[in-house]
Image (cartoon, rainbow, N blue to C red; front, side):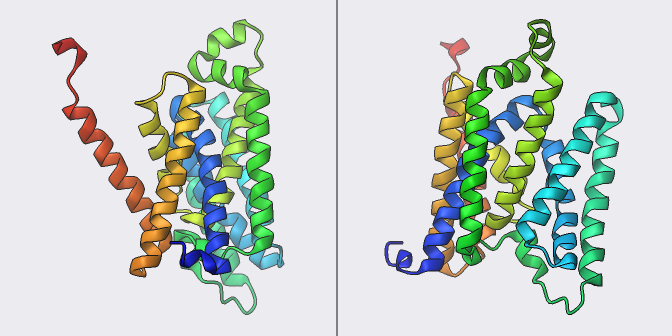
Length: 272
């Protein structure tokens, strides 16, 4: 791995993976405890419309994707708050329409020669320095927002009705959470792509939940695990010449099954 870090693209890939891992560790924890994994998946796939729009208009892809993801997240937040019983249907529709919009815009782009697979399955080895600076700003913004509103987000996550009675503006923080999920999605696209976003947002927090007794502890352990899985996946993909995004997810998946096996084998307190 040290030999690989002599190359600039590997150093950029490692930094991009760390920024995305820290963001996913924090936001993924809130996704898991709020049980909105399907909603996060909807935002991720709707973001493809932003990729297509950015290429069609000649914008930097990250800014176009961020705008489209944020708009999709706000629409989904409004729908899930107004009509929870039909929210899964609306999310599914936005999911499909977002991806279809992206494909059509790419078809209409003059001289289109974009590698579609790099956005579906990630292209962490081609992250430029300019995107790295944007990812650092996004990561810092998420950490600052979660730090400032930690108590409110925790109250909303575990008992929204009680939080409302205590005067917490739950609706505002729900929109804020979905906005931060949109930021996380834009960052993870570089690392593992749209198809595999959900794995980075859910697997490390799921494992961290077993070894932590607080929301902060879960965020911390989840971020560390995500950094470990991403770095290991990157090293394996470099060593064996494998697709980096898929390898990172396979490392996450292996850790998930090992954690489940350890949990099954661990003696139950009820059995003494």
